[in-house]
Amino acid sequence: MTVTQYIAAIDQGTTSSRCMIFDHDGRVVGVAQKEHEQIFPEPGWVEHDPEEIWSNTREMVGSVLAKTDLTAKDIVAVGITNQRETAVVWDRGTGKPVYNAIVWQDTRTDSLCDELAGDEGRGRFRETTGLPLSTYFSGPKVRWILDNVDGARERAEAGELAFGTIDSWIIWNLTGGLHVTDVTNASRTLLMDLETLDWDHDICEAMGIPVSMLPEIRSSSEVYGDLALPGISAGIPIAGILGDQQAATFGQACLSEGEAKNTYGTGNFLLLNTGTEKVHSEHGLLTTVCYKLGDKPAVYALEGSVAVTGSLVQWLRDNLGIIQSAKDIEPLAQSVDDNGGAYFVPAFSGLFAPRWRPDARGVIAGLTRYVNKGHLARAALEATAYQTREVIEAMRADSGVELTTLKVDGGMVVNETLMQFQSDILGVPVTRPVVNETTALGAAYAAGLAVGFWESEDDVRNNWAADKTWEPQMDEAERDRLYAGWNKAVERTYGWTDEDSAST
Ligand SMILES: Nc1ncnc2c1ncn2[C@@H]1O[C@H](COP(=O)(O)OP(=O)(O)O)[C@@H](O)[C@H]1O
Ligand SMILES: O=P(O)(O)OC[C@H](O)CO
Image (cartoon, rainbow, N blue to C red):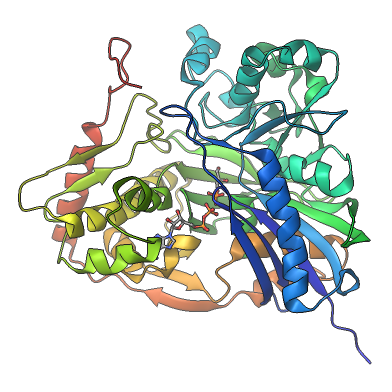
């Protein structure tokens, strides 16, 4: 009798926590998912409750096993993937966070980033870390906690506090105290040297962060420790960790130099595999670790991170109430033929790649009395596609890679109107895979490769299959006209948070 075995993946994202189970063909066997609260204490601030995230995660692990009627003995390994950059600081003794998780979208550290930049500017740590000084990354968030939570700095210096991105926080709790991260998550902190793949002590000192708070950096695919969850079972190895965008790159089988994917979730993240060589961007992209499988050399990526895409749909739902649920945006956008001349630039956290303008804030441009909520819905979807085009143009300029097709995934790619417009505005086909849950799948692959469930990256390539492709239908003049309108609108967002402005 052959026993069927599976891999589980925990995907702790910006809006929800999932646990998924995959079979050997990389097909989804089960999923459990729960949203968590988005906390906005002040304009520009975004927080999560780390304890809520942990309890949802634990609940989803139990829930997916119950739903699929599987037990721990059916699961050969667990992979972890997570929203990146989001920073948690907790007490090593009690395991309690000293403050809420400061989320990647949070802009409270903007003036701190200016201070840290000093005369050298926001590129001060770019050569070593591949990243500009930005509110996006974890280092300034940790510094803010140490500066603003009573007694935190003293406790950190005494070795009592631990910092981690969400992977570390989850693994600490899953294992009862293992303090590790992987190279991909560490590469988003502004504290890791991309060459040595270790913490850069000079940068930690400049940032005011004691090295003793930091987790051990490990590869993305190896056995780190075993699950120790009362009521579920001991003994399942945790064998993969990848930041969620790197995981999606892996799950999309972009495992050769020159292959890229774009994930459409809360934000958009386009990663191009650049092989074992780091490419330093001249056009506003990030250099980051793509993955590192055990003892093999690290593979790097160029990344274009766009802060607000799916979260604009959520904002239309939660803050304006013009839709009841995210899926309602599609029929609303289809109720009109075009954007009616309106452009929506969702610079809610400033603008990330490729422009990196912390001084920008959102605008809706081109309004007339003609514009209705259908046009706004359309403009909101179009914003995602224009921002993607900006990133792809930067990528072409940096790497010379001409994408012949764009592999897409994430929560927004069920939206066919958006996918067609994306293909139209790029002038290249857009392809969605059969398994759209590429993030969880990538983490499952990392774990499964570590324990021999899959033998090599070829298994990952062979499992990938296309579901649907959208071909460009727009003529070039229309494409250029719309993109020119977008560029004009983006310029209107600049300089909103100038020093003499009272705006945040
Ligand atoms: N039909 C849809 N059309 C447009 N956007 C959608 C649709 N369904 C979900 N979304 C958006 O997709 C995002 C969720 O995608 P997901 O990949 O689960 O996000 P994350 O991993 O960032 O939590 C949400 O921001 C939501 O607004
Ligand atoms: O959780 P997601 O899918 O919104 O991804 C968030 C990114 O990791 C932020 O860098």
